[in-house]
Amino acid sequence: GESVGLHLPTLSVQEGDNSIINCAYSNSASDYFIWYKQESGKGPQFIIDIRSNMDKRQGQRVTVLLNKTVKHLSLQIAATQPGDSAVYFCAENMGGSNYKLTFGKGTLLTVNP
Amino acid sequence: DSGVTQTPKHLITATGQRVTLRCSPRSGDLSVYWYQQSLDQGLQFLIQYYNGEERAKGNILERFSAQQFPDLHSELNLSSLELGDSALYFCASSVGSGGSYYEQYFGPGTRLTVT
Image (cartoon, rainbow over all chains, first blue to last red; front, top):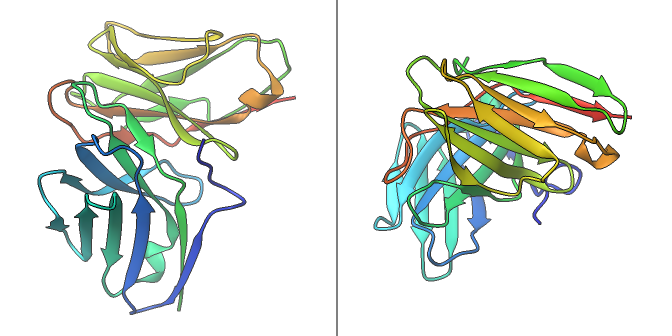
């Protein structure tokens, strides 16, 4: 299974820079994807989602890109702020009427002031 | 604050024991989901209840069980605890279930330590 914690991929950026966090998903039948943010000591928090019939979706300062050909998802954060420092997870729903999310490994984003 | 509450925040117990974790969903949410987050397995879906009925099952061990009560709060029961059960246990809730996705709101988690 995938893991988080000691072996998390990490991304360190300067405040104000744009951040790109990548995620490879496992199932070509997955039809729904979500990015979550988890700050230390807290539960995951929904950031943005995208359905498989889309390749791009924009939110406030965030953009999610979906490339179904290579099963790749990315989260772009514009003008990254210190408050964006957290672990970011992608999650996929592998189809079906019940939404059992499968979470990726997670990426630790550190924003340097 | 997501509106989902979980108790207790921390729990320390011995191997072989049984514990109950409690979750109160956001007001108006009918679905409750339980997740386990450990260092070696990451965040894993355990089970989902919708309006008192089990709707979906993930990687939940037979030693674990859950239920959702008429007032919609949920309990996760973990028995015959092993060291490897030490983890963060999250509850999430959403408005609906099945057929379409409803955003899941996560609680702050219960940290279980088995010694």
